[in-house]
Length: 308
Image (cartoon, rainbow, N blue to C red; front, side, top):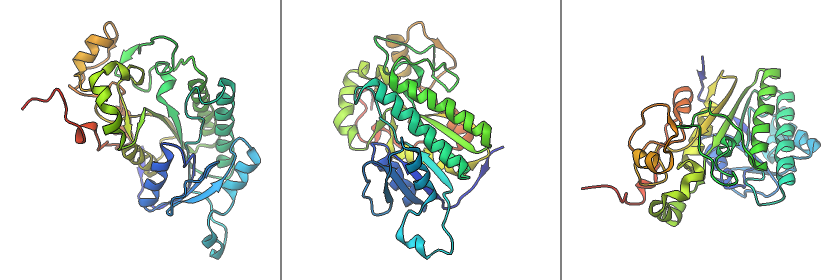
């Protein structure tokens, strides 16, 4: 059974300057944690300590995890250890560098972080996987889910280098958990949306729902992603688990039935769904972690299907 704790933690956060990390790392700091980011680019947030670390270098990774983060830690009687690692660092998509570089960077950095963290005695690790592992997002041509809503039991058979690297990371994390007994939770994060992007991007999504087909019509607000990581840090005793991460509704205005009819005709419906419910199931995160997303594009934009 999971155990729930409310405590401040010393957290080693990789990828703090990325699109998700630059929101989630400060979110954790605002909730009382001492957060150190490890990245090639500093976050430069006054609430967070920055370390420049090449995580593909195992020596740098070990040294950073074993070392001090801030000058005031010199005043402590002994060097503090990290309570948790949150690993978000990665080449974050295809087409940013070569496929080989994407795969090698992501797989090696994940291995290095997991090895260093577990050997140094860290008992809680949260790492970023991806919606792309289900093989829909970056497929050549169209791929449809085997069933909807897509849950964590759906096969992960991607064809692109980025998603392959994320599946490899999941396998590696499962193996380190089996070796050490640490709690290692993986997050299959959907399309990350910053609050300002509702006004910038969502009008096009509402006008043309097909733009969201590759994301299984889902999204995750950075603030709710922060909440998800916080819940992972607070819940102990689950061992190894993978969680989908998305908001509760779809990123389009069409109803569930309209999306089913237009895009998923012939795809198995595994259970009944709500009118606007995400096709990227978050049931497991709700049940095991108490995850409760708070944000929606509907808080910012008018729903074109709403009636008075």
